[in-house]
Every structure is written in C-alpha cells, then in structure tokens.
Length: 134
Image (cartoon, rainbow, N blue to C red; front, side):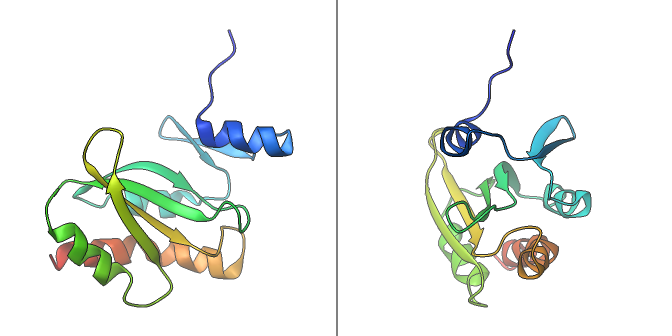
C-alpha cells in the first residue's frame, strides 16, 4: 500500500512533479537541508508544540515553523511583538484546526543559503528568549 503524504508535499509534487529531498528525524519526515542540531534546538523549547516545519525552498515556499504555544492567552500578542523586534523574523498567529491559537514564524531566506542557515542557527534561541520574557 502506498504511504500517504501531507498537503504541502502534494502541492510541491503537483507543481514540480517531484518531491523535495527529505530525511527521517525522530520518526518524522523533514526537509533534508535542516540540520539535526537546529531541529534539536527547536524540539527542546519548552512551552511549544511544533506542528509544521519547512527549511524553505524558494520565494514561494519560505522557511517556516508553525507551533501551538502552551499558553493560549493574550501573551501571544506580546510574544509576536518580541519575536519581530529585529526585523528579520516575520510572524503571525491565527486559530488552528484544533481550535487553539497557532503561531507561524517565517523567513525570506531558506536552508542551504548563508542567510537561511544563519536564520536556522539563531531562531530557536530567539523563540526561547521571547517565550521566557512573557
């Protein structure tokens, strides 16, 4: 039986006719360009549940992390203000499919480029700092 794929992968296949390179990390399929160290740093952040991650592939498909914060209150607005302070992180929040508030943090860069790799090196610390200050 053929294994099912997620919607993001389906969209890429529809447009390009081929899947992006992936690897298995802790039993989950992730973009091959994401370093294990970056994934570990994100996975170790207390107070969030990551539900989607993409290393970024081009301007149409930017690098991003989508997560549910454990705190589902007005502190989300404060978090968004703090995470965007430097001007190189884009972030929004909305109501997810589960009914809770989810946050998307994105970059105009993507893994495999100098600016993209720098973003991934620094993003976990930025998220952690913004969460700790609340």
